[in-house]
Image (tube, rainbow, N blue to C red):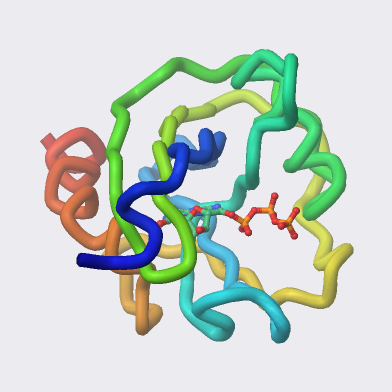
Length: 136
Ligand SMILES: Nc1nc2c([nH]c(=O)n2[C@@H]2O[C@H](COP(=O)(O)OP(=O)(O)OP(=O)(O)O)[C@@H](O)[C@H]2O)c(=O)[nH]1
């Protein structure tokens, strides 16, 4: 059994910025974090007492300088890593203000068909659903 299995789940707010043509923004986890170098949708841990949508907006300002104007809850995924048990709350946003900037030194990329690799394990199964939504 993994060490994280018995730990309290950590809520994480994750945002998928989606352009009108379906392109989505991915970022690469910076050095020093678990799974460094892996690609993910931007986001981060919800702080104690914080609403999930507020956490999403905060993380996007801190990491990318982007102000999310609206976002819809999309799906939830629970995953147990060696380092943590996470509950991922995915949102889709089609309305935001500002061009993404690399404020924490991370790489990021707009992707149609997602070609960046490796992706965080909990995120991989979502790509097929996301493609159905983007390219019906
Ligand atoms: N942002 C994001 N996190 C994900 C995704 N998929 C996934 O498994 N996670 C997991 O969710 C957790 C996010 O935590 P984090 O460490 O990046 O959050 P944070 O930016 O608040 O970190 P810090 O404040 O500890 O530096 C990690 O365990 C990460 O592995 C994803 O697509 N996006």
